[in-house]
Image 1: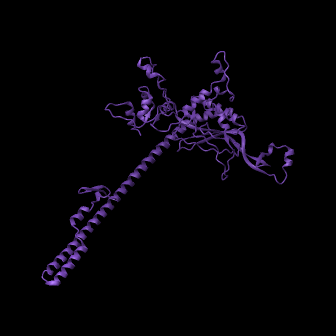
Image 2: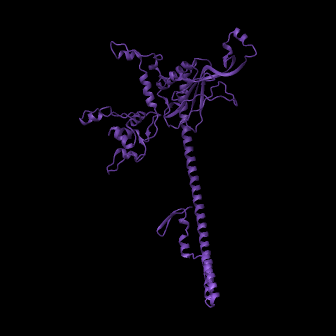
Image 3: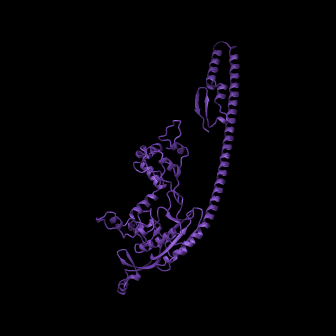
Length: 466
């Protein structure tokens, strides 16, 4: 695919130089889009210019504004900006034609939606801009990951526990009930803002980042051996980068064992919500009570290491609703303290994985060498067997030929019908045994090195099976 649109003219082109390696860095992409229009670059790479624009957005590479190349011809083009420094968790490489994520595009949409109605009105003096009602416009003060996401949580599947299971999966990692959503988002905003104020980036993991999300058990007191339905999970983890090391964050509303009253029509309600009169009504035999896991309105934060080979999980839980704000400073300090330790564990895991990879490669090399040696020995034995069979066949044919020649000489000494009858018998015998030339047998024979290869016999070529 990388060769689509490439023409070798003997003159090195920056796109050709990049394609020779198959991977484009942010720096290389930045140079490319400011040296030539993206339409031409896309043609040489076999992709569209709109796809190239999306790649630049995701890699945070500034691209020339509209009309730049026309202005450049007259020397009026704006100056080329500087390439922004990459942040922890940014995508820094791209392969032509590969699938790209949409973290930066989503962030851009959230930033646009964060413009308040008052700001929009003030941009048009003397006019009032009418807009359709939206959720309360406090979003300009929210962390970018939380801007405009509440409406997506409202579009949800049915849930036995009351915890929302939204259809959209590229969302911040928050699990809560409908009643507790505002509190959960407020708690997440306090945590994200506190981490950001300390210089730590909070974001959604990039596409294809090979980072895992640790599963969560919503129950306040998990019981081993008890089946529980898997909770909703986002498409990618939510991460905070402590230095260069990512730590996964999941904020969820815990569930607790709740006594539920069956009230008919496949409906259960908490016993604690019923009045004395209702309780007396449901004392009849056709109603019953049971215990179910239901949302508790108390939050728990689960932090974990998203690297596959490092198992580290830490949790902070509310004893009563509304405590999370007072827990945030301690959480931030503990996350900052965990960062260096995780960095050392991840490095140790990387070294161990590299050693295991080298060990596997060495074992694979030895296995392939053993298989090749066994195949070589098998071909040698087969070649020797075929050669010995050819020699034995030639020796047998020589004995038969000498026998028939001797008989033919003896027949010449006979007279009349007896000689003719004997010569006829000799002809039948020759026809039966045939006349296989030993030289042809040797030419058809295949040496060990010729088995499994394409070899030529005279003017004909054929493939030799192993």
